[in-house]
Amino acid sequence: MNRRHFLQVSGLTLACATFGRSAGAADGATTDPRWHEADVAALQSAMQSGGTSAAALAEYFLRRIESIDRAGPSVNAVIETNPDAAQVARGLDDERKGKSLRGPLHGVPVLVKDNLDTHDRMMTTAGSLALLGSVAPRDSTVVKKLREAGAVLLGKTNLSEWANFRANNSTSGWSARGGLTKNPHALDRNPSGSSSGSAAAVAAGLCTVAIGTETNGSIISPSTVCGVVGLKPTVGLVSRAGIIPISVSQDTAGPIARTVRDAAVLLGAIAGSDDRDRATEHTDEKGHRDYTPFLDAAGLKGARIGVARQFFRGNGKARAVIDSALAVLKDAGAVLVDPVELPGWSNLGGASFDVMLYEFKAGLNAYLAALGDGAKVRTLGDAIAFNDRNAEKEMPYFGQEIFQMAEAKGPLTDPAYAAAVEKCQRYSRAEGIDAAMDQHKLDALVAPAGGPAGKTDLVYGDRDVGGSSSPAAIAGYPNITVPAGNVKGLPVGISFFGRAWSEPTLLRIAYAFEQLTKARKAPEFLPTVG
Image 1 (tube, rainbow, N blue to C red):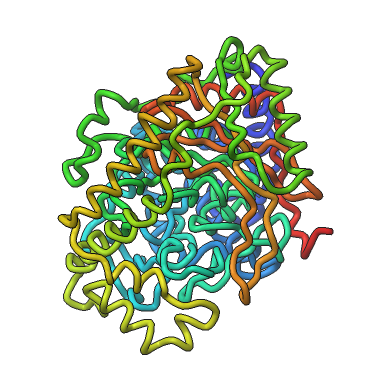
Image 2 (tube, rainbow, N blue to C red):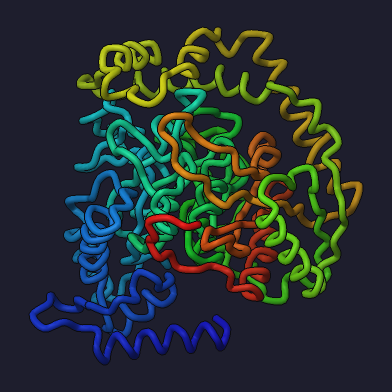
């Protein structure tokens, strides 16, 4: 902890101890309005000093969800709250009193996306009415690790239904079960998807950190347009067991937070090998249990960063934000190699989408088949039929063309599938990111993460606001986005991505950039911007 952060934490703790308690409140309860902007270290310090408690924090955030998410600006980021959150928090307070701490997330309020299994009184539905009432037979490995780390699961976040893999002209942030999530910076703007609710919830201060999932852009894109930090890990660093799947080649869960440090803390808590996910076989030797030691405010000095100009497009004012960010990198001692091309990128064509179609059918059928006897659907075909029968509720704005395309695919033994996988891996890895980094001896690549957010449009669907998530997503490599600035109050993010297992390097670079810029702005819940 550096001196500045120590003073911030100490000041927050003192303020809470001085005037944070409310008359008649439960032990440790607080009315201090800054808890929703506090980071993990500040909350731990306050709980340790007695300035607050896990129970008080759970109460505070649940009330904030009621006042900000359900009422007021009605962000609608939380699809369901955990009826056991208060009891869990009280138990964790008892453990703290007994001098037993589970880890850095002990007592910290967390939200998880509604495609992560929780074996409790909450449902796991991917936002679909077809899974309404479905209670998972066991926790997903990520949720299990969060509980073991002492996190308080406040609830689940809304998402683009079925993780945005149902229709060609979908509207991100909408699900039949959860309705439409709004961007907390401007309520008529889209939060992007599919981890819409997780990013909006973190930005709006409905939790301290959240879990999102990504196949291609579903952590990075909503994080950038909501003005928070999003980290998509290397595929295999975090277990996918118990997560409703799209693509075994590309899927991963990852942290969404307001700071790079909190993202690092959360990543360490959920990373690790798992017998339920073969992709994690080498995680214990290549990953880390704690990523905070890699954070270095001087971490840009001498770093060789390639500027991936192939992915610079879209809004000119957003481009100016990224140009300013590049100047910050250079002034801090980074060596910018500009431009850098990913040589095989143009050869990919539609191979990645084909892979996702094949893998979605196989993966979803396996997931649904493992549900309990009360499940309404047991195959992708069942889900398609359910949507047809319930079209008025499930398909009022867009259809299910992607579902139908996936259902038409054959098994994973098809030669066409194997060819598509080989093509994706070759052109995204050996002849893509790895080739560019080898040629220029790079530590990382940099490009716009996307934004500013477009207006939500339930008639025509999503608007393309640019971005650079695809290379790392298709390769299964890590990517982190950090707020870089704003355009008329709408956040714009910058992405750093690189080789497999390079999370320590990316976190060091992203943290140094964040400390120099402090570009994140808390949302004002404006009705619109212009």
